[in-house]
Amino acid sequence: MIKNFFHTLAVVMSGFALMPTLLVSSAIPVAADITDSEVLFQHKSWSVSFVSFDDGTYVCMAQVGTGDRSFLIWAYSEDRAMLQFYDSSWQFNNESADIGLRIDRRPLWNLTNAELNQNSVFFNLLDNNTSLRFMREVI
Image 1 (spheres, rainbow, N blue to C red):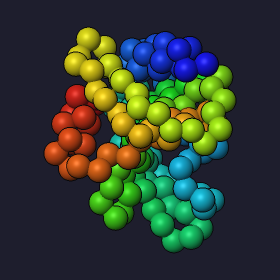
Image 2 (image 1 turned 45 degrees about the vertical axis):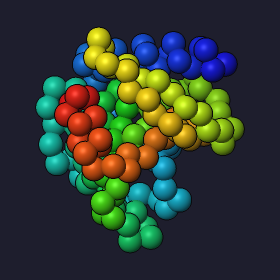
Image 3 (image 1 turned 120 degrees about the horizontal axis):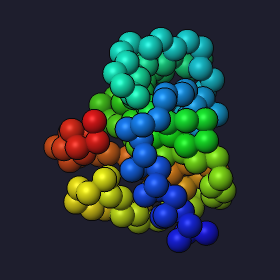
Image 4 (image 1 turned 90 degrees about the vertical axis):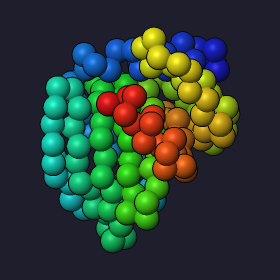
């Protein structure tokens, strides 16, 4: 399962530049329901949305992907960010793992203590400098 996951993750990341956008509301990493969302910006295959939840929280979400696979960046109001990799074929059960991520031919990123749950892999970007460097490379 994990070996297949790594191969699929590599395929997902290498193909994002060509994929249309999609909101993946079933894989949102919060415990509240969406009350409103608005697309703020679109460029090529990427879209950026403002999303509010019924518990009063809100996030800014950048996404790219299809119905079966997507990549999302969640920026929370309390100055933290989270990456989400979604693939409908993945089936995780609240696991954690250290993951190596390579985007195209760029250097390897080591994502330690990623959360693997249901169809998604979540990773918190805690350090602002590292987060900004990663986002510049991805976008």
